[in-house]
Length: 336
Ligand SMILES: O=C(O)CCC(=O)C(=O)O
Ligand SMILES: [Fe+2]
Image (cartoon, rainbow, N blue to C red; front, side):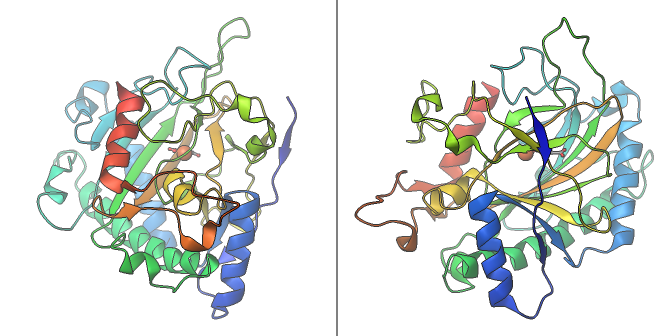
């Protein structure tokens, strides 16, 4: 399999020329479903602190980490616990993760979070709360540009309730980098998947490994394998897909740019105009840390094909769905 390097565009979130920025976002989302985001307002110092706290957590003994097992999509998930693509490897993904859900908002959402003991990691919670809050603000600003890119009012996603108490999930990731021997099944850091939500804002420590497969739609429809029991009206699963994976190399000056990708929910909204691109993390033999922030709408928001993205000759491909129901079904398919 050939693996080439993608020249992803760099979007400047602070550019005063919002229309031209929106046009660049549109092009990137149609062509790749991925772009870099610079000048996003999350300070370098906070990013470094968040990586540092993440490293400290993952260096704790396993029994300490297992005091916070993943519950309600919050907490610790050990090595091999997740397998994003069971068809390509029966062994789970070679990564451990810690999830932080919304840190403020209505109801008891924020209380569901689990935190390492302050005696063990005194600055952990405050660092992660600040980082979560800052990335959420950047994501809100980005989504107004995505609305412009779709030729909608910039507050379109606010008006449809998507950003009313949105579901922002931070996933801290640690890949030990182990390479399987050649006679074994492949071990992936994260096996091939697309993200579920609106958009993902990812930072890595600069160690390579992330690969995207923007060409997946070039294959005949027969390659798209539906999963039985899928109640999402889509049949969009990519297992068994063979395409070219492209390495997302940083072309920005620093590792402080986000790598942004479009998720499946935005793909539904846009009737597949914007692409939720298949991606994976390959082990390189080098340890790697990353932090992914998944920006998802309010669970009560109805996600239905945008008028500007369908016509008589291009009818909606997906039925309207309540965002919360969509996620429940996706998680059921992934974790059952
Ligand atoms: O760690 C990375 O570079 C990517 C992680 C990812 O794709 C995910 O968590 O959904
Ligand atoms: Fe992902």
